[in-house]
Figure 1 (cartoon, rainbow, N blue to C red):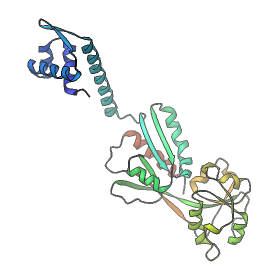
Figure 2 (figure 1 turned 60 degrees about the vertical axis):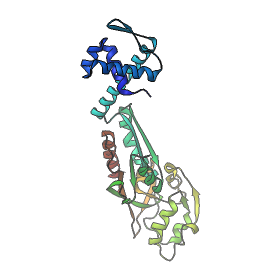
Figure 3 (figure 1 turned 90 degrees about the horizontal axis):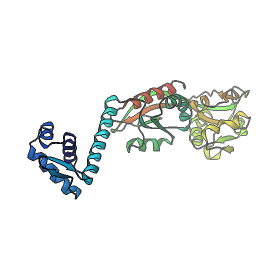
Figure 4 (figure 1 turned 180 degrees about the vertical axis):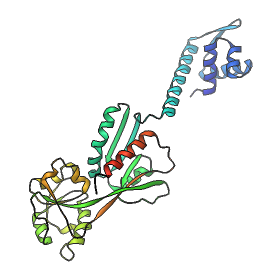
Length: 296
């Protein structure tokens, strides 16, 4: 890589066309300018100028290096302008959250993306441990976790909570008399479903609930947007956070059954501690909070 100081001196020399004027602009001595030129020539391995009395002319190699110097200056100018303006509509942003929350958040992000073609947003639905590790190693700029990570390298704030929901087809009874009645319908399982069952059903059907590994499974879906679809058609029941229900486009065909022991998962907005917070990250955080307010 060419020495940046020598390249800048040479570029200034080419712009002024004179060693003395270049030295004056750079607040250097004329011998200092000549020394930078010789060092740059040694680094390139070619003569960059030919002396013509008190003036000089660029060689072919000198022309190429001069163009590189101008290009570097233009890049640095654009970089400074980007840093100074900190445009929220420019740059890349990586967000990770649960699949159900992603379904709720993405429609809120899309109008922003549509209006900002220089903005790139990557939204990844991921399990909680992966979100945590991705925040720590820098793969994600923002994450939504179900609990305070309580980690010295992370900054977290609670932005809400969402209820775990027992979901049946619309028109189903408002109460469930027994676990056997529910189990007879069959569970529409999904990657997070078994943990949700152990959390919610165990507390509401003590003594009758046998554990997630022994319940009657009617079907399995690993696409978050399709989990409620069988239930909406009258097939089985499922368990989801409230965001998964709110984001379903046919939620009018679903019924949320209230159980005596209700359960909620907290929503924590998390980022790396001490990182610069560009404007796009602040705006995305506001949109995540907006999505969190849609669930209870």
